[in-house]
Length: 494
Image (cartoon, rainbow, N blue to C red; front, side, top):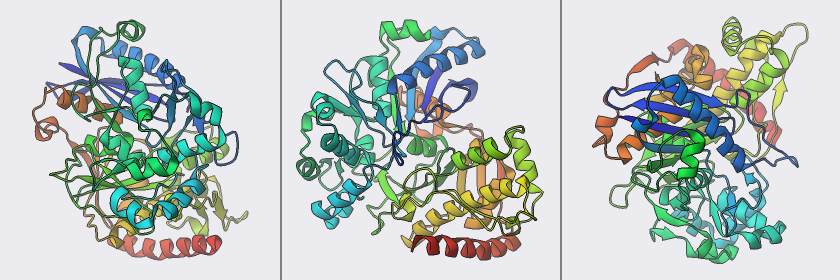
C-alpha cells in the first residue's frame, strides 16, 4: 500500500510517497529547484499566487512517481501539509479573487492589535487563546477595508491547504484546527467565534463547512487525476498546517513533547493539555491535529520568521559558489561567539516573539580586519539559534517543561553545528529523525484512511538517526553570549 503526502510550502511544493507496509519513504521530489518568489509590493507585504502552488504540485507529484517507479493505481490516499495562516479568497466559481496574503505578511498587525483591544483582551485570550494579531481573520479584515471590490467577490475564505484540497477534489472544506490557526475559533463555545465575526462584520457563509483533520475529505477529480498521473477517486484523508504536521511527523502528540523546525522560519512547537495563553501574545496556541474537546491537545507555537531565509541570504551574498554543507563546515571552523560578530535574523516581517515588532535584520560588530565570510556563516547560525532561545524562554515562563526536542533532518537541522547550538542554548537534547513534512502528510493519509489503526502503529518503525546532547561547558558559554546578544536586541527596540 502506498500513500502520497504533499507539503505546500512558501519555498517549494514537496511530494513524498510512503510504503506503508514497510513504513519507509519510497521517493520524494520538490519543485521548483530554486525558492518560489514571494511578492512584496510594499515593505512588510508577502503574497503568492495559489495557482502557482498547484502548478508546482503537479510537477512534484509526477517526479516522485517517476522516481518510485510504481503503479500509480497503488496509491490509496493523499495527505496535505501547508503553510499556515495564509489567506486564500475564492469567488462563486472557486477562482482566486486576489493573490494569497501568506504567513509572513505583516500588513494586518495594526488591525489585529486594534481588534484585540476592542473585542476585549480577556475574551481573546480566554476564548480564542490568542490575540487576532496578524493571522488570517485580520488579513481578511485588511482586504475588506482596503479592497472592497475584491471583498464583495469573495464566496469562501480558505487556508492554503484548504485551497489545494479544493483544487484536487472540487469540494471546499476547512477544519476546526485550521480555524483555530486563523483565529476564528472559540474554544470555550467549541464553535466559530460569533464575537469575532460580528466585530469584523464577516458573514458566516464565507467560512467553508468543517471536515476532520483525519478521514475522507473528498476524492480526486478525474480532470486533476489526468493532469498529475493518478487514478480518479483517490481520497484526501488528512490535512494540517505545516507546524502541527511537523509535530505529527515526529510523533509529537502528547503533553511535554516538542517539535522544532528551521526552514524559512524557525519554530518551536510544544504540546499541552491545558487551555493556556501568553498574556503578551508572543507565542500562539492552536488545536493540535489530535485535539478533541474531551482530550485536549493544544500546540503552543513560537515562531521566528527570519531563520533559513536569513541563512539563504548570507549564502546568496557571501557564499553563492559553495554548498550549504560547505558553509556549515566553514562555520564550524570559527570559535563560539564568532569573535564578537552578531547577526539578528529578523528581516522577514513582524516577529511575534518580539511583540509583533518589525526590527529588520541586523549585523552588529562587524570588524573589517578580523571577520571573514566564515564568521558570517557561524554568526547567522548562532543568531537563528538565539531566536529559538527567545521562544524557549517564553514557554518556560508559561510553566511548560521542555525536556527533549525532536526535529526532522532537513533545512537548518542538517547542520551538526546548528543542532549543537540548539541543544546548548536550550539545555535540551535534540533528536533528529529522517522525516519531513511531506512524508508526515503521507503517514497522516495512511492513518486517516484507516490503514494504520493508531498513532502508535503509524510511527512504530520511525528511527532516530542522531541525538545531540548539550555540552555543559557550551551551555555556560552560550548563556553569557546569548545574554549579550539579547541585551543589544532589547536596546535597539527601545
